[in-house]
Length: 213
Image (cartoon, rainbow, N blue to C red; front, side):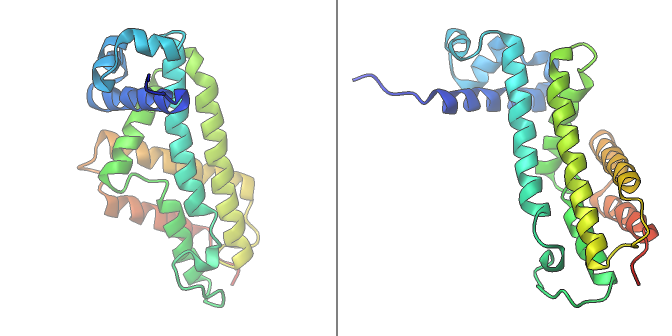
């Protein structure tokens, strides 16, 4: 009796092979041959699930974006007052700001796994000018990240960890740019941008946003 294959699971497995190749060799080496070798499948099998190389690259980028988004949503959608595990919503403004830091730190590559994840994502986004078919996925992911940052800042303001006078749309854009910049530096120059420094920069930025006092 032939072995049943879950097409969705097989497509995800092939996408994971793409991400592994990109992480190790770069996007330019994510050929069908290299992906087939990485996945242990024949090129013909990959072509059975993807119409062409472009479709495969788009799907792999979408899978990575979904993985990042799911992790961030699980972390940032917790109530701010209980994000540090205390469950105490009556702490001074400094405490909500500390838990705000913990929530936003999840956006940063503070360990090897997240640094590798960020490096692969940056490899895809760096190719947008030569692979415009990837642009919609990048735009959708950036919009989701912007929405998550906005949500976290809004909750922090409501909890008294940030000033009530903040221009939230402006501060969301400013903080998103900061997180993107820190991520880029951590990927390109990890020795000069260790996790401790990334946290210090984020903490200092949040201090400038004040509190509701």
